[in-house]
Amino acid sequence: MKVRDVLERLFGDRLDRRRFLCALTGASLSLAFGSRLARSESEQSSSSDGSGSTKVAVIKTNSREKGIGEAISHLDVEDEFSGKEVLIKPNFNTADPFPASTHNDTLIYLVKELRDREADSITLGERSGPPPTDEVLEEKGIYELSEELDFDLINFDRLPEKDLPVQRPEHSHWQDGFRVARPIIESEKVVSTCCLKTHQYGGEFTMSLKLSVGIIPREGYDYMGELHSSTHHMREMIAEINQVYSPDLIVMDAMEVFTDGGPSSGDRKAANLIVAGTDRVAIDAVGLAVLKSLGSNREIMETDVFQQEQIRRAVELGLGVDGPEKIELVGNRPARDTIREIRANL
Image (cartoon, rainbow, N blue to C red; front, top):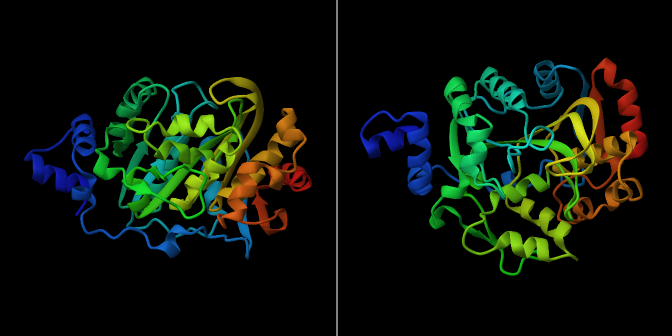
């Protein structure tokens, strides 16, 4: 039974999109997910544990629509989403214009691509910050977009405590673990869509690994305070969040990037790339190589890709490939020179 069906039975009438959001995030998601089994430990682990290789698609294009479709077509995910409930985790930290936040067109074409691949249902889940999530969704027009494209919304800010289970990974610098939004660990399929940008407040860069900070709540215990006050382990702690789940697809919109500054504003350069894969380490490594080819700040330019702390810690935890030789770069004809540059910078 679908989440919407459960809530309609509970509340007695047909829910419009906004009422559905309030009902879903105000009621316990344990009701909605019911007996649907959480993904097993083998499913939670990365598809690349360092022992094998992984594909990363690099598409040079001026069209997000064509780029997203072509990038995904290069990956081995042909029937991955058929008949599945899919959760999309975007980058809606703020409503600042792309590349500060996920471009609405990227979301539109990603939803359409998942529908073409016969996803049974699509839900967008997010926690923004510092601005409240509902304000960010409103400013970006996501409520209207969800109506037009018929996808559902979960505001992680509104989840009750019972739907923010505590996770205590064995290998972690977090003081006493951290809570995460239940949908991220119980959804049948998770798709993340990130931007490519530097991060001037300690993260150094923000791509697919750092996207996971948005699954941790702001209310209650001050997890963000703990993260940002841990100057020696901040980037390692970012990587450690990723132990609790693994996305089934990552699409990185690198049409434009922040080469310095970030995450909400910075120095922009056009890259005209869509990058996709299933391995967070590989995606972030390729993103760093793109930044190096464009010219970035000292932290990016003077540190080898696999020596960046987020990457190094993720590799130690077995979250992805352990070296550049494990990344198989594929793409379209216009991306040939870019792929050579990426390979040289990895």
